[in-house]
Amino acid sequence: MLPADFEGFDTKRMMICYLALSGLDVLGKLDKVEPMRKGIIEWIYSMQKTRPKKNEGKAKETHYGFRGGSSYGGKFDVKDEKGRQGFPKDEAHIAMTYSALCALQILGDDLSRVDKDAIIQSLKLLQRENGCFRCATTEEDDMRFMYCACVISAMLGDWSGVNKDAAVKYIVESQAFDGGIGLRIGAEGHGGTTYCAIASLVLMGCLESLSDKAGLVRWCCNAQGEGFVGRPNKPPDSCYSFWIGATMKMLGIYDLSNKAKNREFNLKCQTKYGGFGKHPDVLPDPLHSYFGICGLSMMGFDGLLPVDPVLGITERAAKSNLMLKHPESKMKE
Image 1 (tube, rainbow, N blue to C red):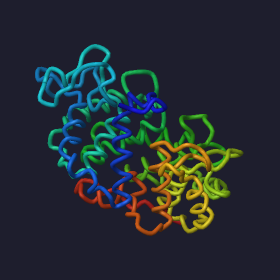
Image 2 (spheres, one colour; image 1 turned 60 degrees about the vertical axis):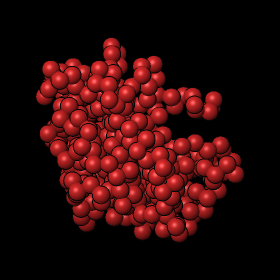
Image 3 (cartoon, rainbow, N blue to C red; image 1 turned 180 degrees about the horizontal axis):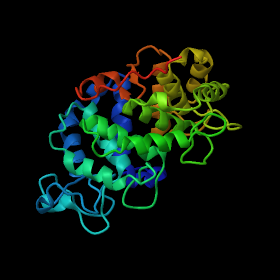
């Protein structure tokens, strides 16, 4: 059962699973879940929506992958083939598929039970003509789902589900006048979507396609104050120590960040309950707790494992997948 204040996360249990596991990994405490490891892996696979065998090789008009949880009310058993295929209006979500693959990667699973072909075919279904991706067979599309599609492709070692030319064009056209990158074309620059865009370009080996590189560097540097801010004239927020900090890492300009100030701000966001809030004196939540410690890891905080800035998991977890060989990410001068 989720606490009452977190009941809104019921459809996102897979994301919480990823954040919790990866957070423990960054802290060097993943051994704490070792007694539950097999059970967690089985639960993750029970959330997988697989193809009916008669549709082998075809995703048709259904999005396959992983659900965020069992909030539809169905009983999902990893051994129940009929239950795993779902029922009307039940489908996977691209962000939950990303979360599930990350979680399995962290736990050392070999991904052998992932219906890889169906997921890759589903990516083709979810990509729009303009290059962006939807989260499911709905109308919602933006840069977050672009990033999810790229990480999924990298983790599964198959890019055939992504039209890279269209995706790169969409990202380039989403760069705002001030150098940041927006949620979609025409939107204002934002720390989270700038990260998603740059990480996607790195994974596709197309970082040099960005048109206004100097503007992006300036935008990242100007996003610093006491901590990092997601947009101009907003208060600093602990999660942007990762979103913008990792962007600067990928661009090879992290030495331009003020580590001392950022570290001081993040530590102020840690609460007496143990997690991190978005601001000082704000209650903690799973997202800010995880990305807050990821930010501290990139600052070289003692006792934290190094984080892969492109994938959002530890370098240890990333290196365990031989297919995850993302290209050199630093921009050329």
